[in-house]
Length: 518
Image 1: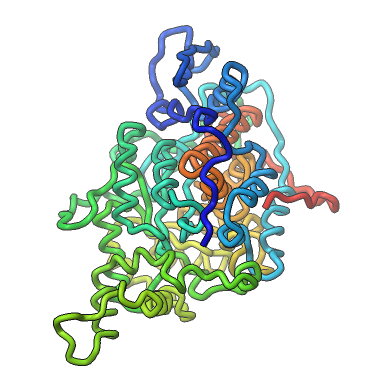
Image 2 (image 1 turned 90 degrees about the horizontal axis):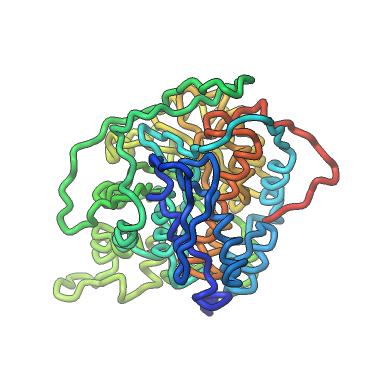
């Protein structure tokens, strides 16, 4: 398969992202006048900015202008969300681009996801102090620097050779939790090692001992009133585990997404590895137990898992390898048992038969996952109905992600954003409700939060950045999205995430408001 180009310009033309690592986003006492320092390769320039007592994500916007004006350096990818897709199309291999861009069927749900965002309009508030802004949120007892998480996206080697390690490094540099995918093209332990490489650029993962209260999402008309705290479901920290022969837990927050195998032994092995690697949260994807009808992939015959790409987690798993050997070794063979590498096609068929079996698990099976995962949080991804959300709350899980898989599974499914308010109303006091599907801009993130989501997952835009320019492209897109969230919060009259609420939105159905950025 052809590989995408790695850059759209010289290395020297990349905007500086180092001043946007999460170390610089922590609150600091700074003597007046407050300043922001741009650490460029050839310049150290200090720009005075009034009434700010910390460096924020939003300063990346000024850094982009600064480098353009002083050094003629343009961003490594476009900052226009509507042009990012086309730039990725031109940079990536056709098969790789189609795989991440494409949706199910006629892509009706993909378009509906975007239209749902466009039908919610923001009502900004004026004459409110919005500095310093605080983008932090509390999830399961831990405080995170922003409400954005990197969605689990599989087979990232199809988009760029930097693959999952590149995106993980970008996330670590910006303090964004990375969610591992079961369909990864890189073994879990290698990604964790890549996260550790960013130790000097970002802080350790948030500690559950932090006592900072999460701001309330309740509305207030008093611009000077401090928002009342609300309490999210918290979990006690578990004792440190031994890590013989496994990955050392990363100092960066990262979660693990499970495509639930049929075989309980394989499931147990995958979860054990994730626990040893220090994954904070288990995300169980419910809507992808079988592959959807995806014309862009069908027309080109592109199914990476069939030829071993995207199967790294299984191929590197000791239990799966032993079961493969037991199944495919010749009768009586003891000296040279069958290995995955001997027959990648057969191994791929066996692995995909486990994780994309066509057989959905049942609600009562969640008890087995809880036993394997212990007291760490479990989140169900792919919930769209209020009824399922209520069952999830009764089942003992800790959270749900309202998602239709970005329109990649059931074409014609309801837009995820359409169901978010109803689900929050039904179970928001019992579960941590998060959101995924169709997010392209900072204002999209703020709309989902205002409708009740506690955090928002982003996927395709970051992968487009990866496909265009590798790790630096992914980092730039993610930094741009965070800057957009920060700046847009200020323009909305909002200082903290907890101030966002439905009174700041109005749903308006314009017949001609159909422009999308897919």
